[in-house]
Amino acid sequence: MLGYHVPEPDEAMLISGKKSADAAEPFIVIVGHGKWVMPLFRRVTYLSLAMQEARIEETCVTTQGIQLKVKAVIAHKVGGDKPAIISAGQRFVSEQEREMSQLTGQIFSGHLRSIVGSMTVEQIIRERDTLARQVLENSKIEMGRIGLVVDSFQIQSIDDLGSGYIEALAAPEVARVRREAAIAQAHADQAAAEAQQASLRNQADYERDTAIKRATIRSETDKANAEAAQAGPLAQATADRAIAFERAKLAEAQAEQREKELVFEVVKPAEAEAQRTKIRAEAEAEALRIQASAAAQNNRIALDQRLIEQLPAVVASLSEGLQGAHLTMFNGAEGVNQLTTGIVSQAAALLNTLKQQYVETDGD
Image (cartoon, rainbow, N blue to C red; front, side):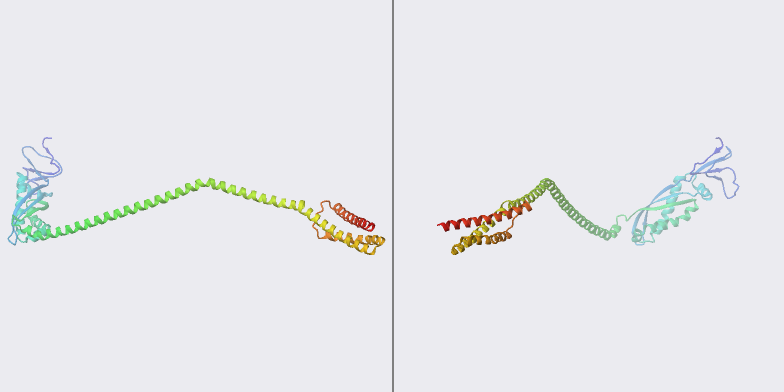
C-alpha cells in the first residue's frame, strides 16, 4: 500500500527525515510492525538483524617466539535493542554485510594476536577453549559500541607454519596413543579370541548335551516301544500261566478225589478181604487145635460138646479180628447185621468143617 511500510521479521525499519521525539535518536526505528510514511518527505531504510558470519586467518606469535597461523569463525549480528540498532544503522546501513564482517574480523584479529602473544604453544593447544573465551570477552565491549553482538567464536585450526613444533609436541602423545591403541587392540584381539574359544566350548557343550538328550530320548522311546511290543505276549503268557495254574489245581483236586475213591473202592475192600482171610486162617488153626485135642481124647460126644462150647469163643475171636480193620459200611445198620450174620455163618461153617474132618478121620 502506498505510504505504508512493513519490515521483515529479521529487519529493522529506519525512517529518516523527521526528528524523533527523543533527541538522542537521529531517526525512527520500527521493528516487528508497519508504519505510515509520508512519501517525498520521509526516507525508509532497512537494516538486517539476521545472523552473519566473519572468518579470520591471522598469523600470531607466542611468548616462545613460535609463529602460529590461527583460523577462526565469528557468528555475529546487530543487537536487538533500539540503541544497538541506531548505532549499527549509523555505521553499516549502506554496506552492511561487507563492512560489518570486515570490521568484526579486524576487531577479533587484534584481540586474537594479543591473547596468543601472552600464551605458549602448549597452552594454546591444551586450552583452546580458554583462548576462544578470552578473545570473545575482550571483543564484547568494542562490538557493543558499534551495535553488534557475537553469538559464538570458534577456533577452527592452529598451524605452526611448517616449523614442526606442534608435531614434535604431539609425537610423545601420538606414540602413547599408538601404544595404548596397540595394547587396546591386543586386548581386544585376546578378548575376541577368548570369546571365540568360549563360544566354541559353549557350542561343543551344547552339541554334547543335545546328543546326550537325543540319545536318552531315543533310548526311552525304544524302551517304550519294546515294552509296548511285549505287552501283548506278556499279557497272554500271564493269562496262560494263570490258566495252567488253575488247571493244575483242578487236576490235583481231581487226583485227590480219585485217590479217595480208590481207597474206598480198592484199598478198603482189599484190607477187609485180607482181614477176613486172616480171621479164617486163625479160625481154621483153632479148629485144628481143637480137633487134635478131641482126637486125643477119642470121644466124639465130648468133641461135639467141646466144639459147641468153643463156638462162642470162635465168634468172639472173629469179632476181635474185625475190631482193628478199617471197614466202610455203605448200608448202615443193615450192613452191620449182614457182617454179623456172615461171622456167625463162617463160625458155623468152620465147626461143620471141623466136625466132618473129625468124622472122616475117625472112620479111617
